[in-house]
Image (cartoon, rainbow, N blue to C red):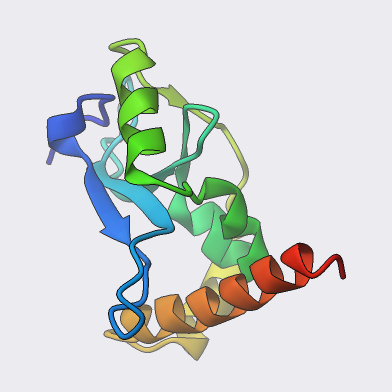
Length: 137
């Protein structure tokens, strides 16, 4: 188990593009680990936002609003690399509340192994929201 870092070698870049359409991006940057200084050493999956802050993915899952994850999407791999090149060594973690009730409800509704299906569902709705914005809706 590793401490969360801003080192590009520790992050995973998830390409959310469509293989069918041969489209690269958008992207999510994730990293498993624990917050520096966390005495409990609670490991979680963190998502990097374009503002340089890391957020525990459970914040998004427990919110009941999948569209909140949109704030963590990068439009290009270059945008990710530029951000990572300019981040300080010590990561900044947004201290946002995780709703225990919301997380419990999410876990009950999504059995083990359903994370990929949930991600596909979120991605489909993300693309719809982006298209509506592009259309001026």
